[in-house]
Image (cartoon, rainbow, N blue to C red; front, side, top):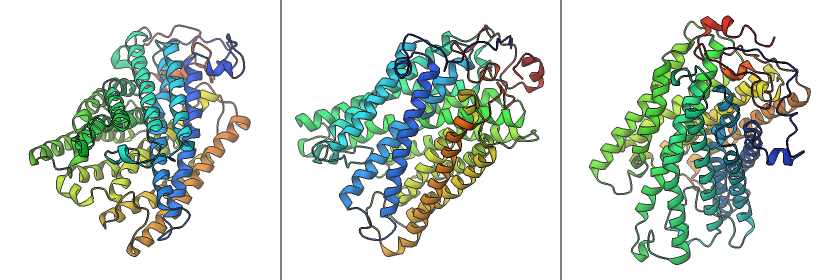
Amino acid sequence: MSNSISTSIKSFYEYEGKHRGILGWILSTDHKRIGLLYLWSMVGFFLVGVFLGFLMRLEMLSMGKTIMGPQTYNAIFTLHGIIMIFLFIVPGIPAAFGNFFLPIMIGAEDVQFPRLNLLSWWLYVTGGLFAIISLFLSGGPIDTGWTFYVPYSIRTTTQVILPLIAAFILGFSSILTGINFITTVHRMRAKGMTFFKLPLFVWALYATGWIQIIGTPVIGITILLVIIERVFSVGLFDPALGGDPILFQHLFWIYSHPAVYIMILPAMGVVSEIIPTFARKHIFGYKAIAFSSLAIAFIGTLVWGHHMFTSGMSDTARWVYSFLTYIVALPSAVKVFNWVATMYKGSIRMSAPFVFVMAFIVLFSIGGLTGLILGSVATNVHVHDTYFVVAHFHFVMFGGTGFIFFAALHYWFPKMFGKMYNEKIAMTAVGILTIGFLMLYFTMFILGYEGMPRRYYDYLPQFQFLHILATVGSWVLISGLLLMFGNLLYSLRKGASAKANPWNGMTLEWMTSSPPPFENFNYHPEIKFGPYEYEHYEEAVKDEYK
């Protein structure tokens, strides 16, 4: 990789374009500024979602009413789900880190459609604002749960239409991002960067982009149908009018299960970047990991029916969906095997991003294995709609995507902001987060197995001890979050200046300044080596910043 960089070039923070101040950010078409706009927005929404989750757990500290009534509880868990799913987990890693790093990692100056990229952020913010505004309109906050299940969502008197419009707008943002990423990967790669020299994070974003483009329109149409049903009572889903509520479930999960892979595939791509960097080894089975991303994206579109084993589907459909659910676990298992094999006999550097990844592998493996329990018809029927499902979902989404969002933030923090954070504090935060997470969510596996239903405002006396333990775990988890974000915020102002390549990485983002210049490079990168060929490290980075 050629790397003759001038130290006098301005970073994108210093670049003075057509607009100044805040307008220079919210009207910028620079992919890095848009990535940071997404990042700040998502962290803000995430903290709101965490606060709502804290209130839910506080309510479950004791039997009966603790701090809120049942209607308030229903509204809070609905808003918690909508914020965390649609405003944090789904767009999180692709929109923030994908926007910032995908063009740099393939040697491009920007994404293929910069203005479309800015529009996607504006749609994201608009959708988020619509969801917040709905809290203050007549009828009160939506109480349907984040799945908007009919017939309740077409009969409740709470404010449903505006949150549905918000989700519809957010879907458009996701589609535009997917189109942009796929086109950028196909058309803007640097000289010498073949598809099999792409970083695996780029492969993951590429596979995710196809799910976004193909799957998201289905949920958009479904949301519109629910709005039409509420306004005009046409009998699409309402059984009282001859409609079929099971049809809604099929349409919802045809998108929403592939959406799980929109959430987790980019996280897997981040893991595939961090492990070889900190193990100082070529990643084991590069092509297997790349193709497994595409396999997950494809097979994941076929397994939605395992959410509906208790809905009255035929036995044939049950075993087919169960079989496909087991099949989709295989490419995920390939990734985990290859990550562990990469670490074998590696020269491992224990740093905060790597420790986050170790926590992820443990938590995600638990989430994946319990997913097979839910994918088996017999055990699914036993634990369906219990806290077991809540635990599984959070192990995959928060223990998976959430922890890797934090890993990505620590891994690329020096590159994005040109500052280093306190490593000891960061690693302490990982430990506290992991302990709090296990106290909070592993307890829910036991609750679910013993029969505690999900979404319930109250519970029987035999469940109280485990609910107390889970609530205390939420306090530990929040303490870890506060420590982690406090360390990063302090480092933004007081942290030591970061080198261009503090982790000694091989991918292109480490071959430019920290933070990068306005158009990423002041030279035209030419790719000579693969992204993980550490045996050629000295030759690849011989002109790198010191």
